[in-house]
Image (tube, helix red, strand yellow):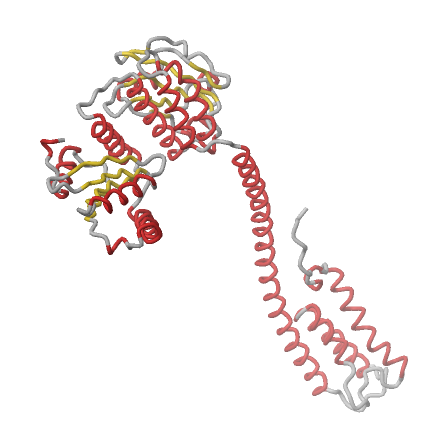
Length: 455
């Protein structure tokens, strides 16, 4: 049943052919019979000032078209000819001009009616097609609206954001710092994040050591997970390459083999920026609508950041300078994310004014306005000026313009100075994923006049 109110129908198109012919014949006979009843000496209305007989053929021509009007006119002409030949009525002479006018007038009216009926028919076909499309659109819109409402309810019921979950995982890793088997202790939290933000329904986490799967028994399990062979080709490929591996979604959807249906959808490495592989997330089930490249890339980014946190928790790397080492570590992760997943990141180096009090105020304001994923590193250059390095993940050049406007407003509110009025040297770099970290930082050291040897 259509949910759109039907448009008015053209009844003349809907009448069957037999009904149309019946109505035409009856109407053709009715007018002469009416004339005979009024005046049996002049049933064809020849002696009236108006030719009323025209209506007998005119009405069928207007209602049904040329063929019906022409047939009606032929019938009337036949009646007139028979009445004149056999002297059935009083006719002084054969009305040839009257008959010719009747025939021509009926043919013209019938032709115009056919033209408009053809036009109405085309319009009705187009209108019917448009109504069907509108019905389909309305149903799809209603389905989309219901889906959107459910998604809103799901998001409203979620108490944690992705950033909060990563911070929570960071705190968890900090609690077990200097301990072993960190992955085993945080693996349930990893699966919880993937379930909440990447729609993963069933997955396992396996531990990897020295590029070898330690055991087919998972460290943690989400949902109903089937047993996985240690020689699974997707697991082997991820261990060899350290990259995300997934099957073709269309092939999986069309495959009827139950053995293949129990195989993996994707395997995601939990690795750090140096490529050290801690474990593998083996995904077995997720909604079909979520099984696409963007969502899989999101999973890979999350697992990459988790791998970094595990490396720091287990103190896999030690830095000569803790602050600079951590900053460069995060910068390397940003370069990897940009290269592999296209995540935009801005690296900003700000050289603050010489005046110490103003410089300290600006530094405090800049560090206080950092977002949860931003990283900062503060250094002194050869002129004893403060240089603030800001790494801003998930930020494009356009978004940086908005950040600069917001900071400028804060300068006016708290320092009574605009950004343009303060002598701040700004060096902006958009991470492209092709950078060499030593060359990039060397360029910024030179631009900000920092002595690299004293770092």
